Structure formats: C-alpha cells, structure tokens
Amino acid sequence: MDFIDYYKILGIGKKASAAEIKKAYRKLARKHHPDLNPNDKEAEKRFKQINEANEVLSHPENRKKYDSYGKDWKHAEEFEKARQRDQSQRTYRSSGSSQYSEEDFSDFFGSMFGGRERSQRSVKFRGQDFQATLHLNLEDAYHTHKRTLTVNGKSIRLTIPAGVKNGQTIKIKGYGGEGINGGPKGDLHITFDIENHTKFKRDGSNLYTNVDLDIYTAILGGEVVVDSFEGKVKLKIAPETQNGSQVKLKGKGFPVYKKDGQFGDLIITFQLKTPVNLTSKEKELFKQLAKLR
Image (cartoon, rainbow, N blue to C red; front, side, top):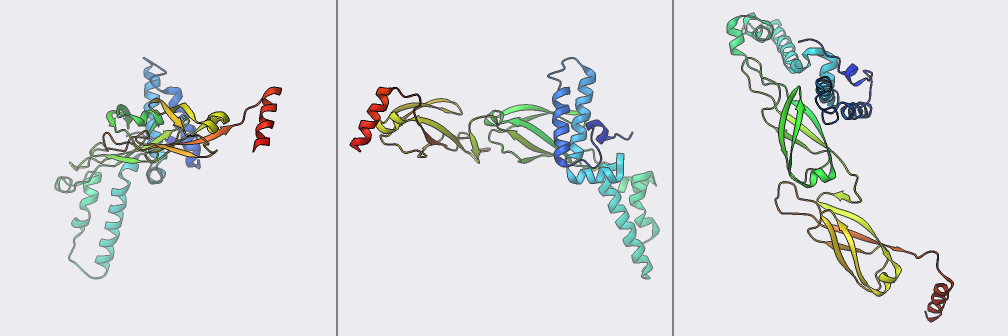
C-alpha cells in the first residue's frame, strides 16, 4: 500500500488545528462534490480522497496513529500490542522463567510480517474502526431519509433516522476495515454535524422561536399566523399579552430520535413591536389614551 499524504490532500500543515482541518475539508468537499461535478471521474476520485483524509485527521486518535505509523496507521494497535508483548516476554524471561519460548512470543510477528504458516493461521485480529463525519442541515434531520456516504473509497447506503442530534455518533457494525488473518471487520462510527439555517433554535426535541406581535393585537387580543417546522399555524392571542410571554405548541417541535410519531414542543416567545411613523392623529389618540391611564 502506497503512502498517502492526507495533510497534502487537504492542503494543510502537520500542525493544523481541528478547526483548520474542518474548514479545509468543508471547502474542498463542496468544491469536488459529485453533485456539482457530474460525470467528472477525477472530481469523484478527489472527493473520495478528501473524505478519507478527513476521516483520519479529524479523529485525534487516528491522527496520532497516522503521524506515528504512516501508511500502516490502521495496524497501529497491533504494532503496539506486539511491542508490549515482546517487552513483557523479555522481562519475564530475564526474571529466570523458562515457561515461554521464543516461538511463543514471536507468533504475533510471524502473523504480521510473513512468518511461519502455523502462526499466520493462529493469530486473528479485528479490523480497524473507521470514523466519518456526515454533514446535514436541520431540515434533513427532521425526516428519516437515506444517504450515500463514501468511506475509505467505498459507498455505503445508510438510513438516517429522524431526530439525530448535532455531535451524535452512531455505530454501523461490520463496516470498518478488513480483519487480519480472518479476523472480524471493524465498525464504522458516524458523527453528525448538523447546521441550522432556520429561524428555530433546537434544544433536544424542543424548538424555540420568536414572533413579533403588534401592540394592538397584544392589547386587544386576536389571531396571528406563525411558522412551525411543518408549516403555518393559526394562533389565538389573549388580550393584554405581555412582551416576552410564551406559549407552547405541544407536538410541534422536533422528532424524538427513534420514537416514531413522537415530537417535542414548539415554544414561541412574543416580542411586542412598537409602531413607527405615526400620523399626527395617531399621536393625539395615544396622548388621549395616556391621559385616561
């Protein structure tokens, strides 16, 4: 396997911060995304390389392994186990014990580097876990839908449940690296990065939003039409509604993760809007009202 310089692919230095890695990845992923470059094989190849680089460098543990072992970073744990086992066996032998032979503790190295056939068959190791980041908009997370994710050069079709949270990580068993010597495959860990470009603030399964209310409706009461995540909702306003008061629309919030048909609430905060550009007559009426109070 040839060495791939992931830092070079993302156009960053080896001392780049996590924020710099994320920024470089997003910029390049948008530029080379297959949807923006249809029928461009080179862009598709580049997009896969960018995703692979991000999967490694955005994960602190994987980045450390990559920096230490280069192209063999996926087998870093096996290398460390072998080194520790070799050290412990040497320590044990130096204490005067003859319970273990050179053949015993060399089995691991034989399996990793082409040793005896018997050793290759006897030592099995689980494949490397893969880490991936999936970028979604808040609107995407509102509905259960399917996505194709490119991981380590392979396309994986996933069903994304409604209600996933920003920063949440899910595990897809058996979609990681190949096992060694017939060992089981590793797992795929997907972390969701959800961007919110809506007027709603999300807190768990609840949504929050502000609604402007004119002073006349606030004083006299009436009806207003407000936005929910699913569309318009007609809302009754009680007379003498105060600035900053709240109403809760039950079940109009965000889906509850993996609980079909369950939703959080939508909490609306009213903000009174003072009229401007009053006419002389309007000002006079307000003066009369002030005298009455």
